[in-house]
Picture 1 (tube, helix red, strand yellow):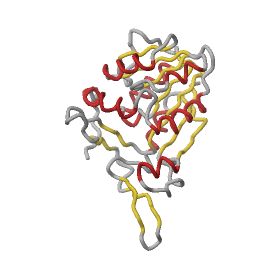
Picture 2 (cartoon, rainbow, N blue to C red):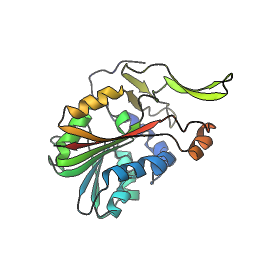
Picture 3 (cartoon, rainbow, N blue to C red):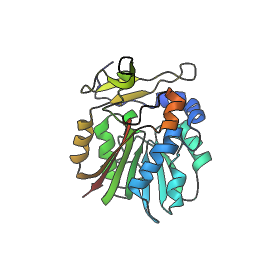
Picture 4 (tube, rainbow, N blue to C red):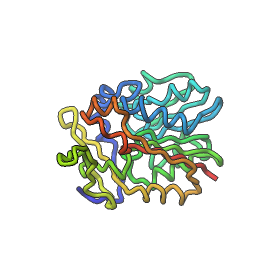
Length: 257
């Protein structure tokens, strides 16, 4: 594990795994998107007709159709040209646009204006974006006063890449969550896909770092939710039906004032 360095991480990893990712997640998103993330985001943001919503690190654009059904306008931004191509083909429409760009440096993007969005969303993307301060800066820049930021992400307290997992206590006959490290920021290469042509990175930061970056930018947190994996998903993917009291995902909503 390497400590995070203050440098920009390129999109080459996502370009290399784009075909695998779109095949795994599909146009509507993975089972985690469909069952957990998208319903949570829609509930917290509650987009209304005529509003403009920005999806940061949009990937295949699974959120687009849900936003547009509410009568809102959707903009997705991502650094991977291949993922954007898939998004335009499968989730495009009259109220959607997909832009190529760096989610950590939106200022100066030729197709975006400061303070032009009613909502900004990180849908299972923020844990894969570095640097964090650049991403939150971009979100705050894009929001109008009164606009809201919604983040749905893996829970950093219970889900640390390669430093956490499930264990079995035979004496007490129960599953437990093992956490090996937490306070140290980590940059973790994920499993290679597509014959090793792409390796993405996940960035672990303690929860306090997320809140610190949010509140330093005139964003006031007014909602915080935690989510365990539903039993039917847990049994299918991990064989563990006892995960319902351990939240592996969280959602934060903050407003700009």
